[in-house]
Image (cartoon, rainbow, N blue to C red):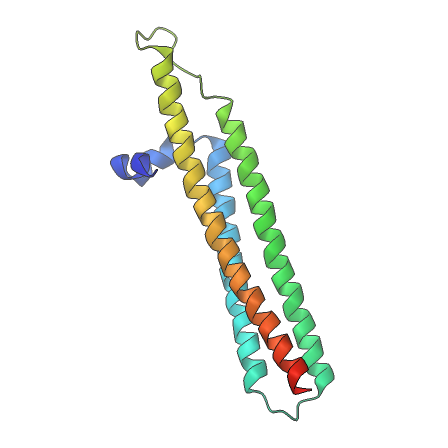
Length: 155
């Protein structure tokens, strides 16, 4: 899976990516940073709500929960957008799988297999990143749901 990356190093892997793939990688990095910082923000907000005094007005708590739900929804939308864009770029890359040197004596099948292995490595890394983002969003969403259930039970 990651043989291309580990055999040649990250710089060789980065240099062999096309412009669309590089932009997609930067977009995945930006989405990852946004999602993790937003997840940390949600978890800190939940911690603050748990440790706040019970005398705090329920309307204030409900507004805070609504804002937290909106933030979790934004995280979900960013992950969904990153997934769609990444899938588009992967299939865009598959169009160039048969690109080869014109005067080469190497069989075309060899180039196709090598390009396919490289594109699969790129896709595996990207989908792993999206999976980690999805799992973090799932964890944060489940914590928000658990906190809401706790509030309803206490009321």
